Length: 401
Image (cartoon, rainbow, N blue to C red; front, side, top):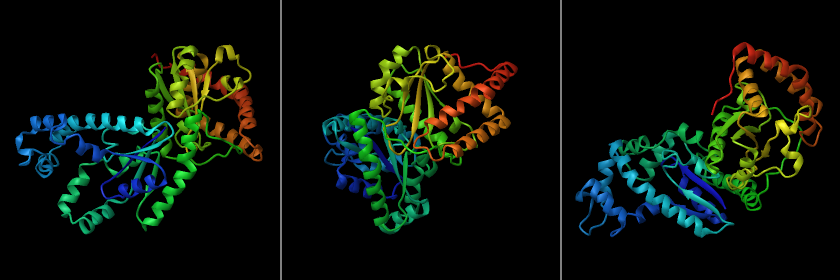
């Protein structure tokens, strides 16, 4: 089952996106509808809300007077948080029941207006944000929904900022033009990313990769994307002690292949193997084949430098996930190499020049395998010595726990 979190600022077009995804075959779970359901007359939720905010939030029939409650909470963040603390756990529990009932092969879309505000991005395989500029959203609320401008601005202010939402997303779709444009974008997303992602999850397979090494300009979004993937991995299994962003995409300003490298810390390779199934369910299957379990450096003893290697089932976001034992040489090397290049821009420039040379040399390859192996000559003949000198001169220490 592929679980998608759908969100967006008020009047951005999230409902339109939800309708389209249902037409394409998704199972929709609407958080707003559930939020109404859990405070219906006679429910535990309504009793809890009335106890917290008083009988004035009930209408003459004993139901929830939403206007009265809204007036009480929208202008007061503390009251809004109080309400959310009651309703959100009930909504999440009901949503989990509906998702379970959808079936293993379903693509489940959970429409959650406050997904980012409630810190749920890492709870989904993919977060989709429907976006529009604030002034356009304001216009829609005033002209199309008949809201007053102060009320519209108040409701926008009660949500996460546009930047906060977009930083928490795997996919951001702009909804500023004709509706056909965003609908076509959703159709492409469904066929090219969501359906293949779901198939990969069902079969525990990686998204296919091919083609030569291509270095791209550094993207500001790499850091936020890596942290989002890292949190999903951290949550997948209690044996995972930490997840760190390593490799070239973790070096500010460095061109790199558009592949995020993440290092997962475990206590033992036995724990790595035990966590593999849960990591796969979270969207990070293990690379097949014994050869994939050994590190790339051919001049290092796999018995000492051993690891487990996972990738990503999502065809839209390439990632290498290196699972290593805390304190092992490979674990320490990955962290030290990252910190060295962050601290020494001149060494980062030398490494980049070598990567660019090798990428050009292997530009006609069908995969990145020979490029990766060729880089080992730079490590063994140039990089390792200077890295060790830097470690000794700075007193660098790996994290203790």
